[in-house]
Length: 224
Image (cartoon, rainbow, N blue to C red; front, side):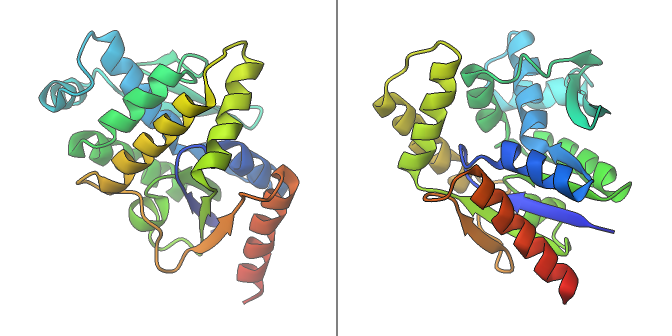
């Protein structure tokens, strides 16, 4: 069964690239980052401090941060406690909350189990921070998608400007670097390149070039 694992830092374009790659391969795409954003949203909705690991752990244990996904016309819809939160999780605040709660063992264990169950049911592409190393360590195709911090900050700035927001490039770059540090130094399942993952550096690539680079890797793996 075709399982593709893609890891990489914040702002590398994993979700949008993975969507297109999966569509061209006629398989589903599981955006695991959306699942962590959903937990972060549940924590904020419950009025808890995202830095309160004990409180977040208790919330998960009580089943009050249950995350699931469903697919509508091939697109992922993310649910928390039965409510569709797909639109609500795409904010800067939800992204920051996701990075915070993803440090906690209880959150990671809960979501990793769910992600593995979903991937075991059908051919699928998963992207996130620990897919190659933890979620699907035996995936036949592993990719580490990255770009320079400056390139990722510029892309994020354009996205926010298109939404009518006007943050400064310096603020976005500072946040990108902070997220990288937090993701790469957390105690539980930190972001790292798996030894057998192939690197795709999209710093000087456009969207189509990045998609094609990944498709070429998939095709080469099938030819072996």
